[in-house]
Amino acid sequence: MELHTGLKTCFLRHQSSLHNVTLVWTSFCEESVSFLERKIEVQRSALTAQKKTRCGVNITELLLPQLELLKNQLDQEVEFLSSSIAHLKVVQTKYVEAKECLNVLNKSNEGKELLVPLTSSMYVPGKLHDVEHVLIDVGTGYYVEKSADDAKDFFKRKIDFLTKQMEKIQPTLQEKHAMKQAIMEMMNQKIQQLTALGASQVAVAKPEGGRGRGTEAGGAGNEPRARVQSQ
Image 1: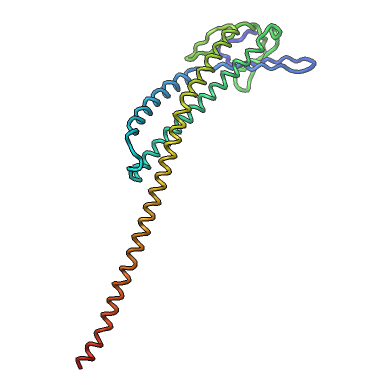
Image 2: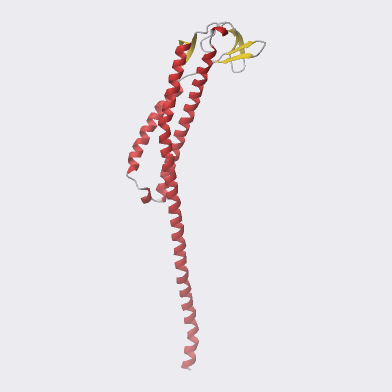
C-alpha cells in the first residue's frame, strides 16, 4: 500500500528476533509559524516605538498610579514575548523530530510493514514503498515532494531560522524583565515613603491635640478660684 497525500504521520513496525523498529514521521503546516513571525515583527516595532518614548522618562518622577500602569504594560509585553518563545520552541522541536525520522528512510527498511494512521487511534496496514522521497506539508493544504536529502536540508534551514528568531527575542525579553524589576523596586520605595510620611503626620498631630486639651482643662479649673477671690 502506498502512502497517501494528507497522511502526516506513519509508523514503521518491523518485527525481528531481536527488536521492533519504529519510525515516526512528522510533517506539519507552517501557517502558524508564518503568522507568529508577522505578529512578532509587529510587536517588535511597537516595542521599539514604546522604548523610544520611555527613554526620556525618569521613573523616579512618576507617580505611583503611573508606575502601576507602566508595570501592567510591561507584564503584557513579557507575557507575549514569553509565549512567542515557547511556541517557537514547540515548532522547532517538531522540525527536529521530523529531521531525525529521515534517518530510518534507507534501503534496508524498504518494503517493510507500517501502520498508516487514519485518525489518532485508527490505523490501516501498509508497506514502505519509497524510501527516497517524502511529502512535506508546506501549509494551506499544499504538499511538496522532496528527496530525503533535500528534506533534511529543508528541516535544517527551518531549525536554524527558528533558533535565530528566538535569539532575537531573548534580549528584548531580558530587557523587559529588567525594566519591570526596576519599576517594582521604585514602586516599593514610593510606598515606603508614603507610609513614612503618613506615620510622621500622625506623630505630629498627636502632641498638638494633647496641648489643646490640657489648656481647656486648665482654664476650667481656674474659674472657681477667681470667684472665691472676688467674694
